[in-house]
Amino acid sequence: MAQSLAKVLVHVIFSTKCRRAFITNDVRDELCAYFVGIHRNLESPAISAGAVDDHVHVLFSLSRNYAIKTIVEEVKKSSSKWIKTKAPALRTFAWQSGYGAFSVGQSAVAATKRYIAGQEEHHRRRTFQDEFRKPESPGVARG
Picture 1 (cartoon, rainbow, N blue to C red):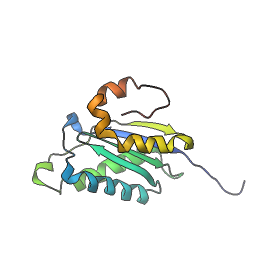
Picture 2: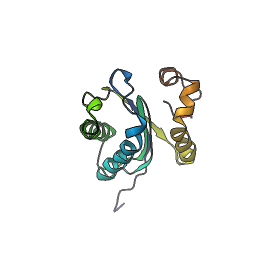
Picture 3: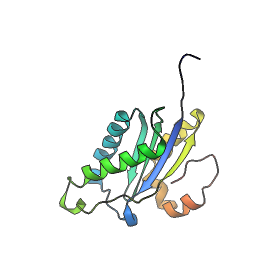
Picture 4: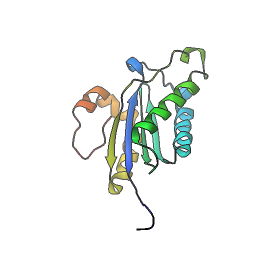
């Protein structure tokens, strides 16, 4: 084959350090837009990005040129530097050291986008920690 083709969709979730509620309404939309830009620069376009007070979700198409680990590290590093400039209360902002990354089939993209968009309502019923440790079903994105 003369060219290489790949379409790998990834749902990544990571939280703020010590689960601190840093991601307020004042910065949430701008942070998600920032994620979209970072992903574009890493040839891994974001399909959906969302955040609640203490964690974020991004669904993206994985570049053939970068490993998931590299993308997550760059997103966390760049967004951490950026968010610290947004308000004095955010100067101590940090992300946790780990993350969750889950493959998503093309047929589950719409459901995953709805899931990411509905995080505030979702976490009124079930905590992030409970869900991450025990997902409701294996086919549903976590977090």
